[in-house]
Image (cartoon, rainbow, N blue to C red; front, side, top):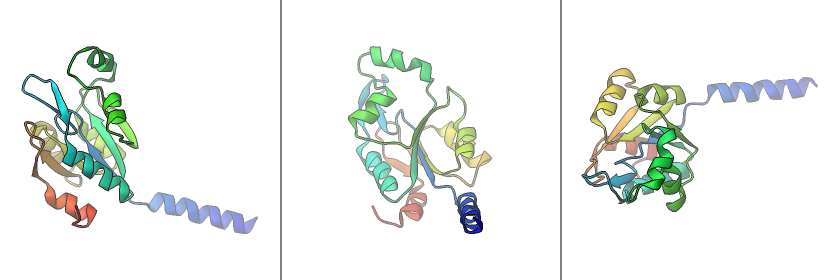
Length: 163
């Protein structure tokens, strides 16, 4: 019985001392690209590749979107739009979690989940993260073409410089 208790204590200590291992991606204009009319034009393939690389390296990968979850039915009914769950299924993604912030600033959610890195196209979200949670690295995505604009060093730090 004493051995069991010692093993249990070691296990609990390991769990509590584990570093956060979460990387998160915004949805609209980051993973799923839209045109200037907010019509879905397709997936951001380089970011989908990064999404999968982080998972392959053992990171927990989340989708954190400002969307209101209650509006997903509305997106499903509109032509040329993508719902998060349909997109995830179509692209063969397997996020550890999808979080809808329901129009709240993402920084609070990212701090709560222990995110190490967040990909986003929104200047306001990036600025809020940078000023209120500087421990979270940010990668700025160009909303018009999906290219990485800044934050490459954060990616290389976590993935070991391989891509």
